[in-house]
Every structure is written in C-alpha cells, then in structure tokens.
Image (cartoon, rainbow over all chains, first blue to last red; front, side, top):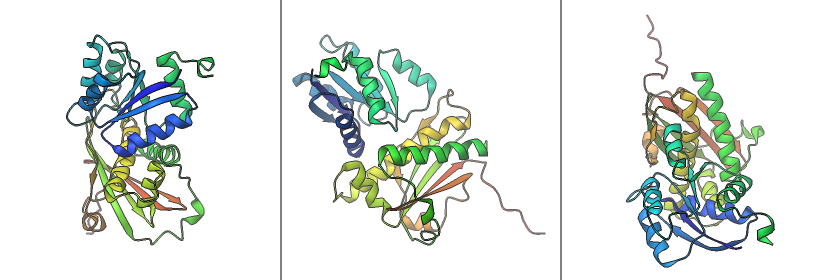
Amino acid sequence: MALNTLVVDDSSVMRSIIIKTLKLAGLSLGEVLEAGNGQEGLRLLENNWVDLALVDIHMPVMDGEEMISRLRKNKEYHDLPVIIVSSESDSARIEMLQKTGATFMHKPFTPETLREAIIEVTGVSHEDQS
Amino acid sequence: MKTKVEKALKAAVLKTFEETCYLYPVPELKDIQELLPLEAAAEVKYRGDFTGRILIETRGGLFRAIAVNMLSNQDPTGAQKMDALGEIANIICGNVIPALGGASQGYRIEAPKIIPLSEAQNNLLGEPLVWTVLNLNQGRVDLKFYVDGYYPVPEKKT
C-alpha cells in the first residue's frame, strides 16, 4: 500500500526535511502533498485522497490544533491518521493533542522513529509494503 | 538549574545537527575555528515560568551548509538559509525548555527571528546562562541560552 501523505508545516525547509526523512524511512510512499498551514492543508484534502497527515502545531493562519479539530469533525477525514511533528515541550498540550487520536513526534527525529510512528498510526505493516 | 540546562543544551545541539542536518562534530577543529567571523544569528524566545531566549550564531560557512543539508539543494536562497537557521534554533529551544523544570506548566515558544549581525556582534543581548559551541567541518555554531534574571552580573570593583 503506497501512502499518500500530506505534510503541513509553515517552514518550507522543515517540510523538505520531513519529506526527505519519509523517503529514508523505507515505507512505500505515494503522492506527497505540501501545505504551509492548516487552512491550506484542509483545502488540499478537499481534492486529494490522503492516507496520512504529518502536521506541525505552531503555524500562522490556522495552527495544527485547529486543523486536527476540524479534521475530526469532517465526515470524510474524521479518522485520518495524524502525526504531530513539533518541538512543543508543553506536556499538558501534547497530552491534549494526543486525545484527538494523533501521535506526537518530537523534533528532531530519525527515519526509524518516523517509520515506527507511521506504522503505529496507519497500521501499515512490513508485509503490506511488499 | 545551570548544570541541567547546560547538559540539555549540549545534547540538543548534537542531536539536532546530527538528525536534522546530517552534520557531525569535529572537536579537533576547536582551535582553528576560534577566530572565525560571525556570519548569521537567529533567536527564539520562550515564555512560561521562566522567560528568555536562545541565540544561535554560525561561522565559517555553516549558515549555508545547514540549508544545503536540510534541503538537499546546493544553491539555497537567502530566505531558505534564514528559515533553516531559525528552525534549528526552534528545535533546540523546544528540547532545552524541559530542563528548566516547567515543561508541564505551559511554555510557549515564539517564531524564530533573524538577528541583525551588528546586534549580535556587539553582544547587545548580554551574558547567557549557558553557552555551548559545536565545531563541524562546515563551520562553527554557538548556542547561547538566556534565562531572564539568571544571567551572571559582573561584580563591581570596589
């Protein structure tokens, strides 16, 4: 199963790092879409099928928290696997975000960490990729 | 607190450069890189039980190398280089803040800001609580962590 992935981060450099790490994670990737904030991310979801979203928290226009909240209320995408990729250190906030069903991944991260997080949220196993 | 922050800062700098930029320390370059001129600086402010900032400074070509490695692009634009430096400062700040002892008490990290060279060169930000240096083949990085009210104040001569 090739995973269509949405990467949402206001830093183009960080999006680039996430995509590079995704490629190094050794999972079967489909299309990778990029958005600079939550609003752009939601707009991309209207016209594209996505299996996984990697979302930053602190972004202008619409932050990750708001984006995930809207996703969970959306009929089509309410159960979309989400990984929050952030340098957030506020454990109360992290706990609250995890209650939305998202997995939290702290920056910096290795391809192995990302791979484990993706397998955890999508259920894609090693066998599924062959 | 100083020892804890120092340990956290050193660990965060190493981990961030290795895992995000694929750049590794070369301690043997310490003396050679001692007098390299400053090329870029960025800061990230944090607010919570303590407030302060982290300042990142690059020397000797590292400013470009960070963006080149993060983007896998040999010719990054000025904006990309600044974005990359700011992101590195942001990641390191997020990893050091828990060492302040208030990680569960609502720290907020502001967006990274590029500091004018004149301001950084003249050390207008004062003395940091903790200062760590990493020497790399691509240049040198200095990380200065400030906690408002905790910077050392020089004693007056009587």
